[in-house]
Amino acid sequence: MIPIFFASSKLANPGNMFSLSRFLGTVLLSVSALTSLSIKLIFIMNSADLKKIQAPLKEKYRENPASALITLRAKGKVGEGVSCKVDTARALIEAGLHPATGGEGILACSGDLLLEALVACAGVTLSAVATAIGIEITDATLAAEGDLDFRGTLGVSKEVPVGFASIRLYIRIESSATEEQMKSLMKLTERYCVVYQTLTRGVPVEIFYPGN
Picture 1 (cartoon, helix red, strand yellow):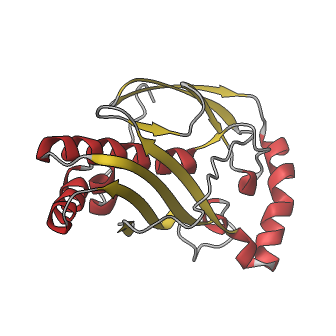
Picture 2: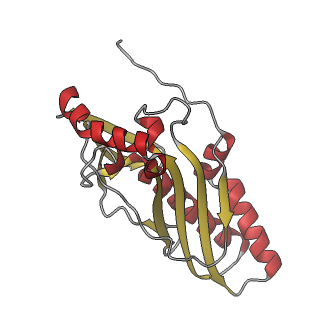
Picture 3: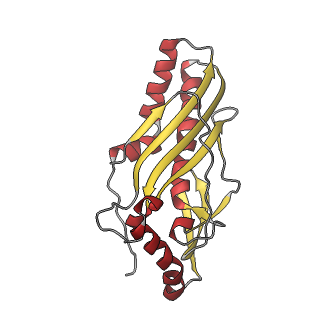
């Protein structure tokens, strides 16, 4: 289970680390619906090339474990109607390795996409809840941060878990709503945000390999 912290205070330069990277295999993501995703893999890098790129990174992380700790970020802004604009910059996303694992920073990082999904879902849910309970939002911005130790995913240390250790979601809201209305808005946003609830519940994920 990943701890996710909601905060409604003013954002302090959360930044937008929408990292893009080179890849072991290109992943083309085409979103056709909120719950539908088509993925196409195009492998253009062999094992030797990958080892050559990652070897110095692994050595660096062994010698300096702190250098493997990197915070990924994503941010968005509630739009008109029930919507949230997330800084992805494209409708078709090409995902690959993060620079900390050998990428060059030209393809989308899946870790960033996860944070962006959280930001988008929370923003849309916030907007929908506000609309449903009659709260007028003048402005709202969201930002997510996630802490990763890349020694885990690179197999540098078996003691380091693979994946995010913690995630923080910041929501800044400008509204003339009362304190009680704001409490209800935040409570309901947390309750009905699909991505937030999925991450915090730690739902089981099954992997299938049809035909193998």
